Length: 311
Image 1: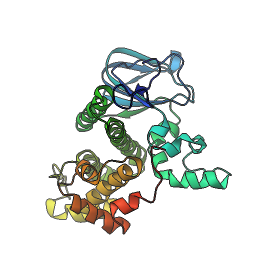
Image 2: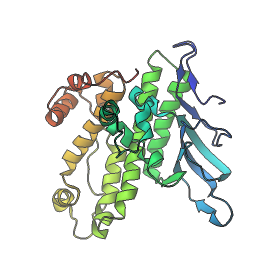
Image 3: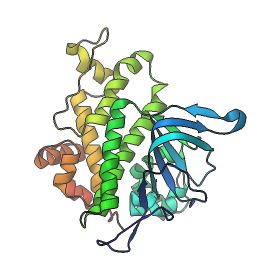
Image 4: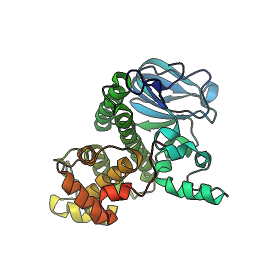
């Protein structure tokens, strides 16, 4: 754990990979300032801050830490979970450059840097919980449904980084990590947008949208209210969802799946069939058709517009 890097052993021997998965929850004493850390605490006592500013954080929780900035003291007792340390370049090689030093909504003065900044705007959004929060660490509460998915995704990530089962382990490891970041960013967006929503929409549709972001990889997932509240009978669900969220449920699910697919296309070299499966499609052709209807181009042709994510 000293270097907080995964290094290839038999396959890709000696090559360092700027992501590290660990069941150790401690914070490194002298961390590299370019490091970010995702810490998931499933159970135990968590205190943040010190002295009069000390506060309790309820578990389960995801903590986002950015070592470029001062990190509040964390006191853990009987805590269980996992940590993932990473550098932005592991998402896409283009993020290893100085464009990461700017906030997501700022543009650098240099025109070439501006072009890079625009090219990787989507990837920078994934880092919002780490760089735009004002809190360090930034806590995101986790409910039971999200908890199960996070644990599954981390298990898949951990297997690739630790077992290194075949020559594709860096690509698959990166892809599982991207899925974790996409879920994390959606949770962050929910938390930030929830307070500004009318109470009616908050009560009726927030759980529905949250479940979509958890269950979209399941091919048989159908978006429906679990227990329709007053004035939200099944017959009116799709109509009211569209009025409140902006699109019909089926279109929202399709757009989300294709958005995840676009992220995996741009930032990994996974084949199209695996990307389709990871996005909730049983049929690669169905994914390609949905993607073309949104982007106007076949997924592989869309991928070819971007530089190699591995540099």
